[in-house]
Length: 318
Image (tube, rainbow, N blue to C red):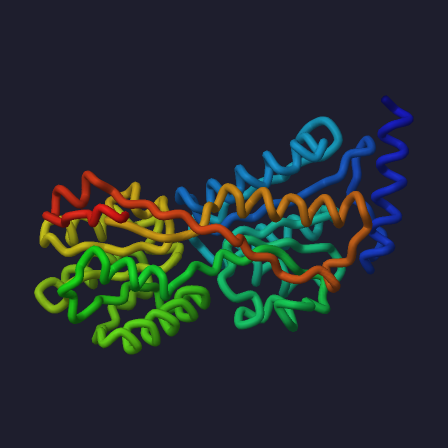
């Protein structure tokens, strides 16, 4: 066992050199140290984290055996992301996994040597995490949760064929949300739909902003916005009472009261990110040369309970 651990440590030290790191390993007892910072707890990001851990285990990297996982949740506060990032960097972790855009930005802004993987980031290039999604050219890479926004708007029209105006709900400080809302506006305009923005700056505004659009819109569209994902129950409470359907960015939001989505599987996205981690810690790949990866398959999710509650008939072909 000691020989195995020594060999693993030697291989990883070489991998650090190949990936352009500073060579100061945080290994303890031959274990590779992986720090994790997650922006907030909600079903999508939690699934992302679990997929990453399970993906590592499937590749032979198990917490407490040959790796040490140091997990921290920022509870939705970007300032906490910075504090956590500083801790992980000061601990000289061998690799850092950041879940969601603010978490990834906090880490990427503080280290240019430790390999950093992100996930649940919509457009890494726009978020200035990489120089290019195709060739990051930095110590940062990962997986994107970009969803098929056009297909989601098409789904809205399929479920609400008489819709004329859509309420776009999002957090104005989330770069991933702003990016998706721009795509949603284009999709709505191309389909003859008008829209009105309902933006918030903090979670306490979610219910009020959602309520302010009642009677003004025929449906809501909510992208994979972390603040709204965590506060989806407040959206559903208003929307479902007013019998206004909510088309969401991901399945967890549907489970928390939304009507439907056509989106990605965050658990599988986490497993895909774990494969990138293995390429770095085992194969010595350099994040700078590893393109941002995307899930190719999307999944349809419709809540029959919500549909019945708000009086929506689900077409037979769905």
